[in-house]
Amino acid sequence: MSGASSSASPWPLWEVFIRGQAGISHRHVGSLHAADAETALCNARDVYTRRGEGVSIWVVPSAAILATDPDDHDQLFDAAQSKIYRHPSFFEVPEEIGHM
Image: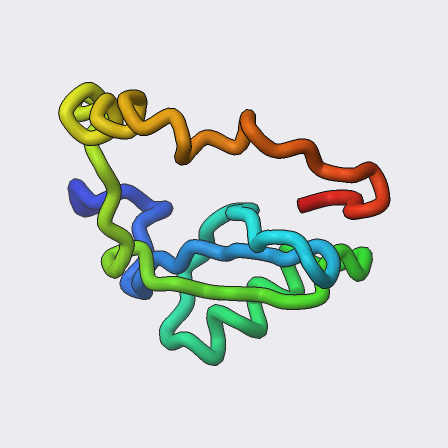
């Protein structure tokens, strides 16, 4: 047996995002391996929406996602703390609005 893990896949890894209902954001629900985008979309539907949980699915190649390093938190996000007008604490949302 070679040194490679038996769980390693020759197919690229895709991140799956599901929108649970109209008007709310997509949320990350998991990952899967697939040969191409169309296959990833079909597999995501089969794996992550078995009970009709979603109204929309996004699949994104994991390699295409660029993320910040948690160690860089201070330099990236502290500048926003000085701009309090950007925080939603100055607004009251009426109950009729519902989920935002």
